[in-house]
Image (tube, rainbow, N blue to C red; front, side):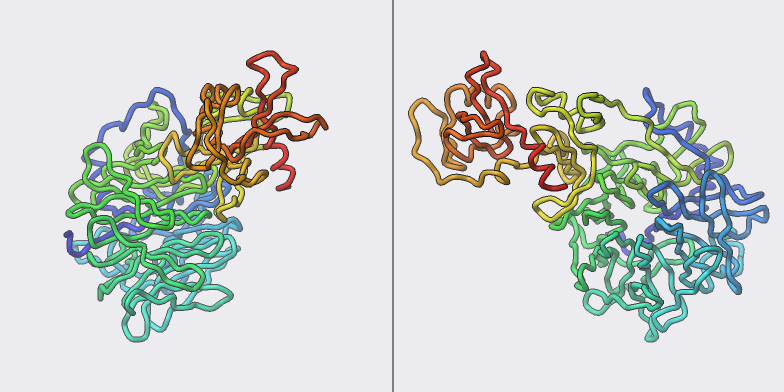
Length: 547
């Protein structure tokens, strides 16, 4: 195993930056069709280096910047293309803002670097002392410690809850939750060490826990631990070990509103980015021939950002966006003529798909903001609604208007029958659900409206001339079977929940119908084939119930 790890916590070491800036990595990846625009977030006056680490819903970012002196760095927020100095409270001489919430409240830490003995490089020297801070409305608030001399804040949610790590009175290091002016020790596995790295809107917290005596996050954002540390989650006051891949080490770096967790885990001699949806870790692999990967951000749609790393675990080779089962270089997503090399570092991704980080522009390294270009869409005047992205692709590939109907809602987040939150869109006959835990094409699933509106009937005897489905104990035959087979089968409609029977429908007329997990087939003898089989407008009915 790698022994003692040094894990970048959303901040790139200056040594790597210098290597990238002056040895040169080329112009990055070319792209045929730019999917994102890239904006320079700038620096403080006279500065040449800045980095964006945290991002809120509207695209305001938190991070740090150097100034003309180049010797220290200062916590900043980036708003509308301007770096705003948050202030570094005395006696500290440097500071970093790591996260920002919807109210533009930022958290991070302030510190005093050790004297430069010739081995350090300016603001990235290790700290002499550091302290967790919260910045709000021009004021810096010291969050205190758990009894020891040092602390650092790593995340804040929209409720104002702050997490991070602190030393304790007995020399240990523990994850903390700060709220209502008080800091609480979150505990650790086997009463060891711990650090919290992220918190979602519901108060679920993730991080890492182990037994490393020197465990913690230093002033350049390195998380220092041992190969025995594990990714953990604190939920409802309980601490749970998320496990590992095939090695002995893992760390959780981010959690989204639905509780999906990303991070990194050892796979023998290397480590890979992972996604966890509650049980076990899914290996996201690597790309571009690199042995290591690290996922450090995830949004509500399940889009993930992170790093590819070479044989040196400190050497960032590229940054990526994980989607549709693949790690895609960020540099391949922006115009080839942008002049940017985005392979330096990535900080976060929000629910709008915006991405922040640090990249090369000219001979400087600046914070950047990527915004998605307008995706292809299809709009319908009949309902004044539009389709785009994966839902549009699915709609077009699975019967379009005839099978799914018109869209009757916009995309929205909704808590579904399993108690989890998903991005969904309603149509006249279906509800499309985006499941980022599944690889494409299974990332778009249909809601099981049939089960909602018509619970499964008792199993029936197998009928001659019909197809019998043992999974539910029902037969499908005749024109209903032909329609089921021709228009998507099991994936589109699910298993039958009933036999054919006569039912009075919404228009007051009796029809022969059959219920399936995701649809109701109706026989309309007044129509000539193939239009004699129609689908019930379940989407309208269920949406009305959920409003």
